[in-house]
Image 1 (cartoon, rainbow, N blue to C red):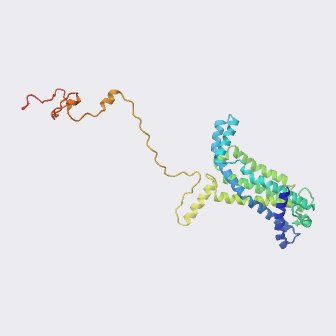
Image 2: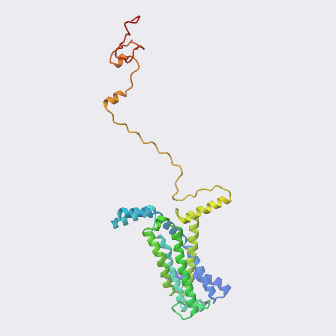
Length: 345
């Protein structure tokens, strides 16, 4: 934890030196705003992980129909189902655990801040905090409540009221952030199945965990976590509004906004391309090759072209100089040479 103490205390004291000039070094507002500044720096550093989390969450949503097909096909074999599901995730480059990365990476920082503030209130500084700064922090107040106190550690009603307000704010922002994701940026197919059940469980379990654990957090830590939740809510709102997942209410709302904007400017409405969009015209497919029908020998013989020339050749006779008489027809009584009763026969 020593490196985390050092990083956290450097950022915290840096902001305190700035706000201390405005509010006074012993002011609770200086320390509270320093914690807010620390939160913003940490969350800004986690933006790449947040982007990865959003992409992974979107891929998980879009893969739900395929996951359901695998469940129908291999529902009787749990091991095969797990193997095929992981193969699907690997093929599409989806990490089902990426959505937990920002929270997991924040937990060590959260614990470092918790220990830093707790020890500072006991005049046992960590990191680069000096003994004088630890004393100032332990004695600083915000709305009459000591920043280092918790709901359970004191009988001061100023502390309890402020802690209760911050716990409710932390719980509400956690719930609304998760609710925003499920109601705006999840397609209908993703609202059922194991992934949806996981999201619904987090929707109610996480706020409950923070509400129960929040009464044991110092006021300074509650300020950090509430500020972090507000950042997450705003960041997620921006991403959902400007880059929604295809087939979601957020995507429909964006299409409507684009249509209204184009109508005001008198421009034709351009269709919004999504990941699921298909080209309007597809290349014509080649006609299937006609397979010849099986015919008998007599049918094949009857379809052969009749020879143009000496009719004797067609009947097997050889008469090289003979010309076909135009009066000769198909009547079997007609013979070459013409009618003997005609003149010149």
